[in-house]
Image (cartoon, one colour):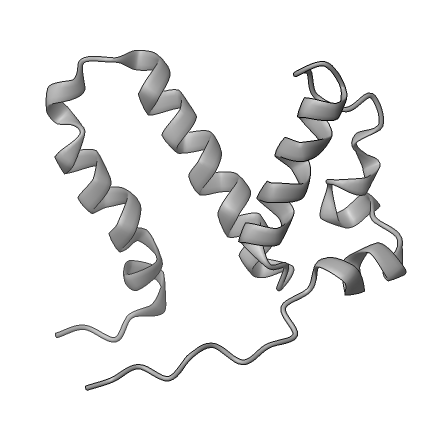
Length: 98
C-alpha cells in the first residue's frame, strides 16, 4: 500500500497506458492525454466534470459540430465567478460501501 498523493494521482493514466498497448493508435493516445489533462484541470478547479463535458459537447453541437467561438466560458481561469459557481461541485460525493 502507498499513500503518496502524487503516485495515487498518476495511477489511472499509468494503468490506462498499460491497457492501451495493443491499440496501436496514436490518435487515441493523444485523445486520452487530452482528456486526462482536461479532467484533472476541472478536478483542481472543483468543477463538476460531467456537467462541464456535457455542456461543452452541447455547445459544439449547437455550433454545427465545431468548438464554440468563445472558449472563455469553458476555460476555468477565464470563466466569470458566476459561471464557475454554476459548474462547481455542490453535492457531496456518494458514500462508498465497504
